[in-house]
Length: 140
Image 1 (cartoon, rainbow, N blue to C red):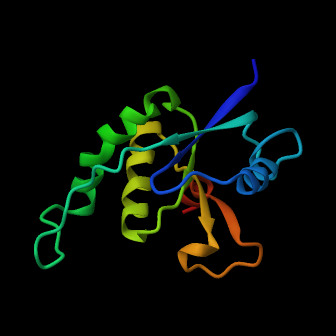
Image 2 (cartoon, helix red, strand yellow):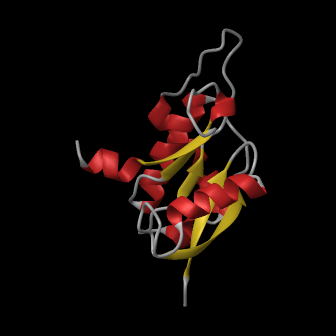
């Protein structure tokens, strides 16, 4: 049975055009990154996040906040991806992006493929890019 690659997002799912681009990078025998997957399924992560205090400061460290949002990932179904690399669509808030990437790595054992959109203030040629964070972390 062909493998389905899970694609988790917090803010907005990938559009049809974005799915086509990501699919070309991650799916099929000619994919840039060999995932062994034949299709993608998008899964929304509940955005119930800890709030900062009146001064915009969090009482918890990033690691503590990552532990706090692991149930959100489990609710979205990440337990079925244990031992497999998944796709993470970078949210608008880069601080939460780092926290979720850490939590995903804790839950699956792998750094995710991260989809970055140019709309998030990042300058890139084609409007989006996919980064293999597991490969980057393994190379350190």
